[in-house]
Length: 556
Image (cartoon, rainbow, N blue to C red):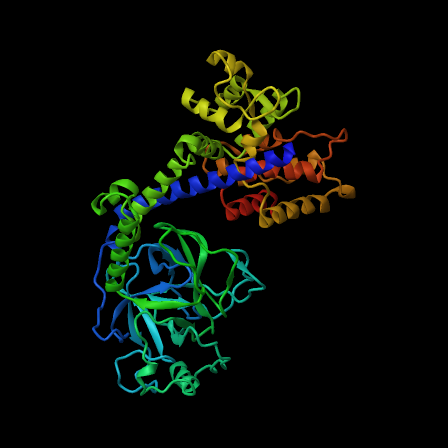
């Protein structure tokens, strides 16, 4: 029972720490964006037509039924686009977020692709018609258009989805009105029909009107798209629907939800719990056009419901639990409130600020610092229980230039402290602080496990295996020895060599010092090789950087 309880406790702390670190990074990013990209967050008007219909030339917002967030364009973060043109341009990241106020990020102008598409000269948008969605001048000087790649991507993995989902296509906003920016407006409740992709050289818009003629009468009012209608937007070039789901991505504005293109809706494992004001999630490929009148109504409705639930007068609601409407219109307010909520739950800075400071220091000081510290802990732990006296652990941290204040030391005890029996430390059992410090021990294994994921990602693991296989191929009898890694290791790949902090000779010596060869014949097993790269992985934030480091180290 004890190991299971310990494992569960570790998993809970891992999840809580990730939540805190993610929220902290989000608010820091968002606060920076509020300053440097404030012009893209300023309020801007939308088209508020009296007839409630969607017209060409309207400036509107597009709301996801799944995340209940608005489609956003990132003013800064670029993505590489292969549009099939001779000279391609970079696109910008798109996402959905919970901010409901209209601003240059989320207001798009609806335009007609072909005036001769079979729908006459009406200014209304009809079901079956092909449109473009372009950004306004508030985001960039030139318009960017919502664009989807015609080619299908890799197999869909994770992200709250299930099933053998294939054919995920990239979506961004693109500065050219290429065919990838053509979107056919369809009813969300109508099952998608199988359509034949037009041959090269044919008019996409004309073919779309023919395909929709069976279902839609262009002269009928029932075919006109209204604000709030549940619609699908199908990419003419790729046949995929515009989608958004609860998979979190980091944008220039913090944590938001991804947008992609896919054939058919994805099934969600869980309903995304964004905040208390959101209803149950709808289909990932369902959207609705909306305007600032709708957003104002939403905020007023939220305020009324909050006031009705409150036990204090409505004017004091903001002082008690925060202004619920501000959650919807001010992203910085919402992020700050999120941190305050974590603090109130005991999951904020009071609990995690010490490792929020220490972990980045250990990872950023050098690629081998984490490994050196862990090896020192192991060698100092003569009993082999994975525990060290509190002051001893504090001293080892000082050796790698991490000094703890007394307040941070207290937090370390709360997170990693155990007593003589190995049970989690609890304050108040000792008569003096000196007696407490002499008894409390730090579970350093838990300290390192909380620093990173329980296991390396598949991509990282496969890259390390490729490197070890290469060493085996070059070794006599496929037995890897120290002499092989000394001869084949490329010190110029060391990050500190590339920054000019150390020489290649120093990097070579530093690398060779990291190996504890257990075998008498000097061979290095797969487990020893993997153990080294597990420590390097803890100090490497992204898969891309880790893969490049391993491959360049061995010339793969």
